[in-house]
Image 1 (tube, helix red, strand yellow):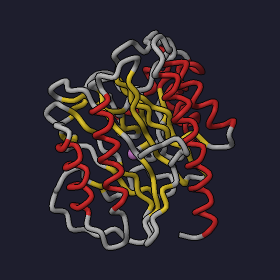
Image 2 (cartoon, rainbow, N blue to C red; image 1 turned 120 degrees about the horizontal axis):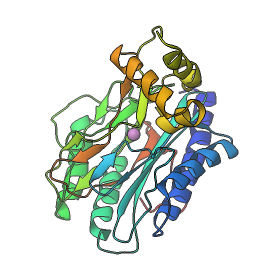
Image 3 (cartoon, protein in one colour; image 1 turned 180 degrees about the vertical axis):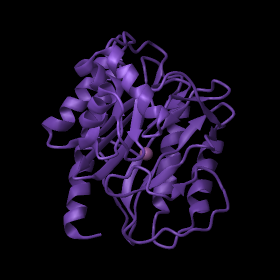
Length: 302
Ligand code: CO
């Protein structure tokens, strides 16, 4: 990786870590509006000089892929377990990071600790030549040590310019995958840990979308959406960005057309199949002999 690219990753990472911590701190207080926190995170990314890749969150047994709509009234409540996943980019070079907080309780401390341990153990192994199964095994055994398991059908991933999932998956259990990490790879490791079965499935209405392929829009509703999200360059966008500008009806019509024609893919919330609670921690890093984690905040202990 060249100096310029590295600088962009590091800058994006600093902002992503800061915004993640700010969002997490707010969510940990009971009565906090999800909508306000996600709006705050997006605003802060821009204020700090970053570009928004995404600001997402997920509640309790939902592992990932939730964004509040413009009129979402949900607030954090005592006993909740909340994930926040923030993506920031600099000209397409992405910092992807996530953390989990519990709201006014200590009952989820072990579940949180297990995901932190899983991430820490896997990160320690990151170096050129390391086989992917080893990273999976490290995460799984940390989860198991505290009586939990990892979510098997979610994984970390390589990152490339404007690509959130650039082709290689980093498993969260021993898949026996022998592919080796290569120097210069940009990767995100993100164990999801649960006392449940360790599997997720799509559940509920999607509020997150990505442009999957180029193509024409038939209606003005669809055309406006494509124009609006062009600047994301294939990175995710969320419904409320559109409904605030075009209204709910036109947005729904446009999204429906673009999904049907395969131009957009939707990403519904991912819930644990046995309704087990899910905790998650994630860092982005560049593989080298001295691997550089570029999303670590000074207050992170993982
Ligand atoms: Co990720």
